Length: 506
Image (cartoon, rainbow, N blue to C red; front, side):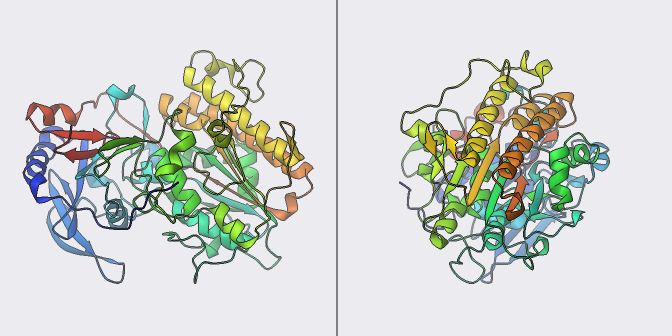
């Protein structure tokens, strides 16, 4: 069941203006500049991005474009380039850049879409590239920001119907994945160039070549939290041979695919599968506050993943829905993916039915496992087990039989791998634990490719490999929590997802 949430711009209410102004005075003080990159808001019919040394105010026009109303000081969104800090050597030479040196791709659209949802916050705080969330475990790898490294995900598309151009100096958006997959498969459009209802993305025709026909099958892979510069460099060095195989048989966007704001997990899993930005599909963040219902909503946790899609906006469709609209009898599968709207088979449907698949008690004996990190890291252990179970499901379905059930070959399958996110967080994107996670996931991806090949349809299948966001190395010395300063000033608020501020609420 979905909620009904029409697109309606959220704006700061008059009774909250005083609190907002008091909070902005604190957040934009130079003392917090090391941890607060900028603050976003919607008020008085426009959108604002404010930093301690400048601001920009803009609005959406009737044609869907954006125009600047005014600027003061240094415009925090001045650089919206997509190619900054690529390739890997360039990124590593500019670790945790300051706002004045950073880039914020598609920034106007990113800000506006967030405030299109009625449950949007009064203020959205964008943490700096250097900020280390000590209270959240002090991870060396971080995401969630609007900046280019945290927004940039890998984007590789390959197989039948795809141009074999290899690595190309271009960028896309994660919302482009759904319409591109639908066009590649030949799904019936909802309207001109629209394949999933209300899509924000567009078909990446620059990567397609349908002269030899469309694929009969499609398999998508998601390496959660993977830095694309790292992934591409490892593929080129021979450390991720299956990723390299996909790049060689298709097109990889060197500048990546940009995640929607906030650049967090389930918001962008849902964007990939639906073609909508977070403010338009309704999974706003890992956690947010629904003012109208008076309750906190948490979607990105082991406890809530099975039912996370219940808060999706009414009318949202997925690639699974687009496939079924065109081929009602087609079979689709969602493996280890919480954004499973419309899927015939879903890992999380087992949990919803109370039929939890048997979970190994330890990773001992699991193939494609880096023992060096499994033993000391709880997160690496758990993600290894989860991803192994995903491979068992995907390979079993392609073999035609899994857990005493027979399955046809999927028209569309989506496979989510979680290990990379755990490892990139723990050690940062340039660490050995991150590299080990890529190698392990690459090998598991290879197992699924081998299963498709054994099914005899490899030459009739297309593939995509993406992530839900990027991952940026922070500075462990740059710590702090803006909430402390706001509470010391006596301001009443909620901070959900550690970036969404709602005033007048406890």
